[in-house]
Amino acid sequence: MAAEPVILDCDPGFDDAVAILLALACPEAIDLVAITTVAGNVGVAQTARNAGVVVALAGKTTPVHAGCPRPLVRAPHDAADIHGADGMAGAVLPAATRPAEAEHAVDFLRRRLRAAPPASITVCAVAPLTNLAAAVVQEPAVVRAVRRLVLMGGAIGLGNVTPAAEFNLFADPHAARVVFGAGWPIVMLPLELTHQAVTTPARLAAIAALDTAAARTVAQMIRGYPEAARARRGGVPLHDACAVAYLVWPELMSGRHVRVDIVTEGEAAGRTLVDWHHPGDAALPLVLERIDADGFFARLIEALGRLRG
Ligand code: RIB
Ligand code: CA
Image 1 (cartoon, rainbow, N blue to C red):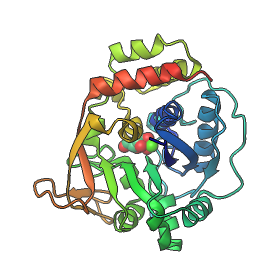
Image 2: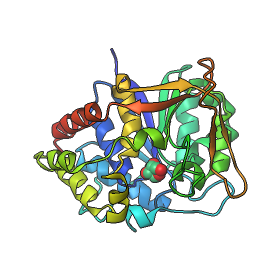
Image 3: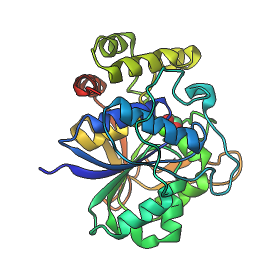
Image 4: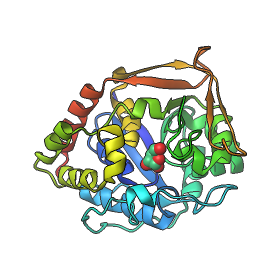
């Protein structure tokens, strides 16, 4: 079967970096058309720089487009306290081999999707949804070209920024409202799923034991993750890599098609109201709840071992 064309929208961010590496390590399943970045974990210039560095680390030349520098409505809110001021948990990284493209990410999304056949490109979004919302508002027809939107974000229960909201949707709830209402098929990976995929000491040791620059960098970033955040979960949750893993190994995960509404105002802004107990038809978002974490890490570690940058 031919590899699936994918555009990855991200905000590197340590777990975004692992997501990029995993996508580049699986060319048999993912044809990574381009990476678009947005302000999120750190500012958009830094997320674009970090994406370029990770692409170089993998020895690839995937184009990177920098996108929106701030949310649609709310003031910017970053996660530098978790990902570090540089967004890469202080890891020592190579220089990017190519600068970000001159074309803005939203212009790229509109141009690339406008030209694509119906349902021909998958978008994987692992950041605040500002770029995607801007593209949909400016050119609603882009939805037609998207086979599916696989996104890491939201929570069925507790958030991770406030009790109500997970970071990607907290950062830009208005963009999330636009994206969830756009009409494209959505697969949502909430915190309940990604918190099952944590780098325990044994998994970290297996990654560190790999003899590749990419794996060494991932191990370095895991070790650079704030100790308090690691202790809370027994390891570092690889939120964004789970979204890419779904593209390659969907059999590792399961969920239900349920209604998802987004709270955009007030104390609960960014909350996803997931009607978990009333599954519906396939037109509703597929909200994933379970992952085979051992199976995920076995495949991730094998993939990282293949990346010879
Ligand atoms: O809540 C987790 C999400 O927020 C991940 O995408 C992580 O990179 C941060 O952006
Ligand atoms: Ca992210």
